[in-house]
Length: 258
Length: 242
Image 1: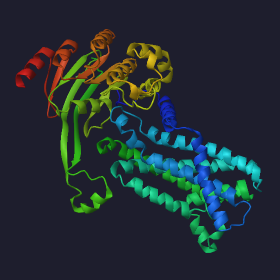
Image 2 (image 1 turned 90 degrees about the vertical axis):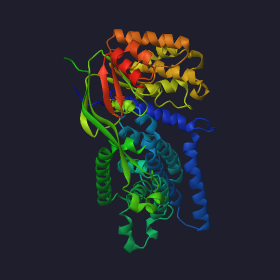
Image 3 (image 1 turned 30 degrees about the vertical axis):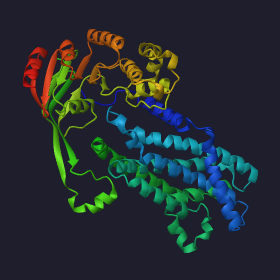
Image 4 (image 1 turned 90 degrees about the horizontal axis):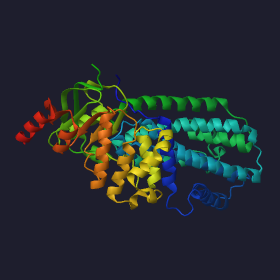
């Protein structure tokens, strides 16, 4: 005898949730999946125009740095915004089936990752056109940075999704915080614009680390800073573990919140 | 004696805020009143044992805790006290078409609903033809579900659900679905489930159906078991009481 639990195959469930999420996202849309690529590049085009023409930034690599920064930021923003509503969106299912709820959190990240991945392929096209000093031999390090970011996203989504079932304002608050993060990270301006004495403070922000390190290895051709990388990895793992524990503790009674 | 489902002294209480405060503004304005919650005891010290192959009916007025009881057995709600244990694979059948999405095609909905009910993708692939045939929707399989009539949606949902490979089924008011022909079909399905020795708990207001299908009936009122006996006895007492 055992406690009642989900009796099916969790990975099959995961696969179907991701697949139908994908289908739903692009149904009724004229360009469908092309939007995934088009949207970040249109935003990029606007920003490049504004910042390199209006503010006359003279840097051959500026646009490439901006594009990479925007891609990484958009992945984070999109994945957490989907994560925050992920449990509530599935509440009709959760209330009827003993559903492994952490799956809802993972599902919310996968489709954002797919968009990010195709955006990155387009970035590589630009990369070959601009021919920067960085080397593509550093791609494994870049994937490590993306992995750290993904761990951080999943950890945060454990908190955000539970929080949103209790307090619906969290979505608006998070949207504002994401805007703040956009300007607090070296995306539209390079890190060198930040006064030297504030730079180390600035790099406490994991988004700033991931963006500057990605730019360093892929674009400007500098070596990776292992101390910064280690700090961000530790931070991400702590967020993931504490998030998971928090989630396990709260999830038993989450149905009472709906 | 073998046991399929066992509930030991199960109690479930819901905390219901007197005013639902789920926005920050309300919380700030009502800061001092925050702790004002009412607790509602939906189930109170329920002891219940179901044997394998047994069909148990649950009856009682609205709000008596019938659906909460099924949800506690299904593991959707965690009881405050007591414990729930089951032997076997449980298929919760608390609503037809869980996870159905009107913007997905009927085919996509079969896959989605199937995995939610605990079927593997391999099993769904094997049963796909049967499901479509039983629901009688073959010509419309690639159409979006929102273009289906309510009756057709229910038929599809029922056809998927009966393919799920559990041996314990929890059915919440799902008997009275479809037109006459479909009802006859579902009746044959229930007879087959009975022959196969599945364990079933049915919540329903249709007393005739309960009497026909069940081996034993539980009458719930205000979260407590009033009577737990043979169908004739319980239904007779219940109808007299009402």
